[in-house]
Length: 566
Ligand code: FAD
Image (cartoon, rainbow, N blue to C red; front, side, top):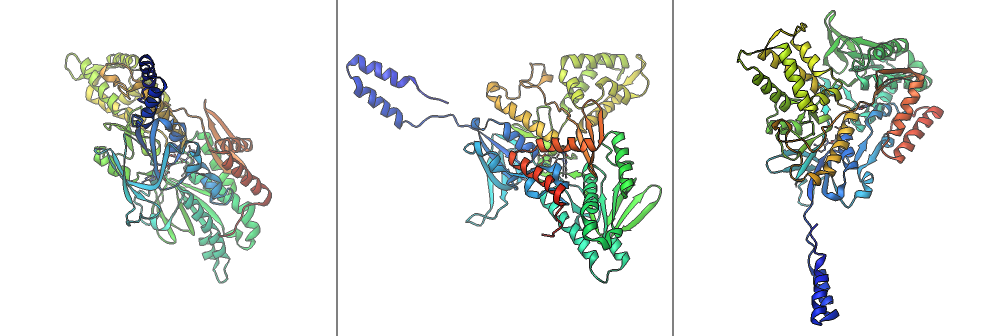
């Protein structure tokens, strides 16, 4: 802010000395009033996306310091962990969404929202190209361009069908609120269809075969919800067809919930077996037609099963706009945008990426470490002993604590152990290691680093972290990101982002859940379900949604779920 508080005082002193008195003072004040205020223009921050990452950033950002523009095709935030509960009416769709404009009501003068989709990021012109999601302008054109000083890309991920034929045409998905609502309607449709007269038993069995492709948390939670809906509500309403219902999970890995502790996976499989939910592990779906799902396993070859409804929850993919941007900046052959530990997109000034569309990579550090190792190879033999490698790494970790810190924050093994493992099982200090082989080991470490989970927890923590950095950015004007560590010029202004894992839940139906909590603490059963209720109620973004969700749970306990097809 550039202002001139001294002007009127100086004028008053001057005119008092010259005998001009009050007249001169008033003139000077009038002059001041007519002078346009010379405020330094605020930096423009554009945020793409209003999901977990985008809203968490906006909530913590001191918006008065910037000119903030938010662009998203949805004018609400959706609490995705409760999407499976919408599929069967345990919770209503409107209970888990919060309008963006309401979320930022208090900051409304500093935040502008456009309900639009960004279809191109132009890093060279520092602009994003958008298309209205709600129709066109008077001139019939809904496209517009927004320029930025800082861009925060929080676009999340999209579906990934792995190009499996027929999936797009015949499967349901569970990614957005609309998807969950579609599933809810179709589940009821299947029951009504199977209740029609003149339907053979075989056809009833097919119509009421619900297949979930993907045994991750989303697929498992949906299967559990569907089973509860069936045994708690639908059997009473459709008694004649209850025996024809079947729920199947198809999972390509050896176990469902394979990102959880083994005890949880085993508990879930056992519970599902008891509940009559079929779990087919080791099968990969290769084709889906309108009534058959074809899957392949190593031992059984190709098998086809008739189905009535299929839900695909087998992985996430890259949004086209991110793919296009990655091509522009040379990050090809990647699934998500690569950022440094301060969440800035590699080689892109002023562009940050958070949430499911981004992943932190240690590319720079790894490259630099590689150079340091080559320098350690004094005799140019192309080899170092394992001891020398460890010494150098130790040195790197002391000089650049971020390397060690980062590895630890990602729940990884100690850097040196990982490298030892990757090099081979011999830990003899004098073992000679080929530098090229060592580079392979580095790539192994790098790929381990990339496997940070794509979860709401990570997205929200990244948003919070980045907002804190932005709030302090004016204190670090010289170099907003500070000198790069590896240049040896000094330290970074901010600590690197550190993910703090707070645990994860898997609701398994029948008022039972499993939880993996920090410190390798595993909890399963009915009491964990109550923990789940309290955590998910407390995590709601507003008191309004908290009340709505809790009242939906209460309504379900008292009256059951609503099975109307509306
Ligand atoms: P999103 O939340 O997906 O937000 C992306 C935003 O970008 C949206 O607002 C979208 O409208 C907007 N957008 C999309 N395209 C454009 C465009 N072209 N231009 C502008 N804006 C655009 N995680 C957990 O930690 N715990 C859970 O229990 C859990 N359960 C889940 C259950 C389900 C059914 C699903 C689908 C996910 C679940 N997740 C869970 C994962 C979690 O939802 C994601 O990791 C999280 O949403 C990622 O946040 P994000 O902000 O990166 O992306």
